[in-house]
Length: 162
Image (cartoon, rainbow, N blue to C red):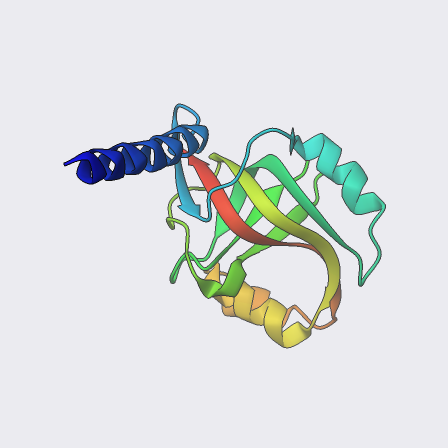
């Protein structure tokens, strides 16, 4: 009996720690989440991210969280999105390991992203693929003729304004 009581108390303490940790992972009011959970201690604004991207060169990466408004989303699966910076530029967001997607109807909603920011050169073929996914016309797709330096982000977790 004594061993059973000790075992039950031990299990209670283990579960209490898990419950406390789960409380730390609560989503902010008005948001739903996809992907991995992440801490909301240091979330940068879109204006702050402009400055961070200005300092990045191709090959650099930066682990960071930031919030921005969604400009567009893949209409086929929700497998990528573009978010607005305040200076008129957009950041191309993909999802780590293709492990999760976002809803296809979240344009103009605020998201909080966690992951890696980087700058890359995107081929004509890849740009055309994204343009087709976004529902662009054939003429708009065919107008893409040069590689482009793109502000990119690989998200491991996303919070979406409801």
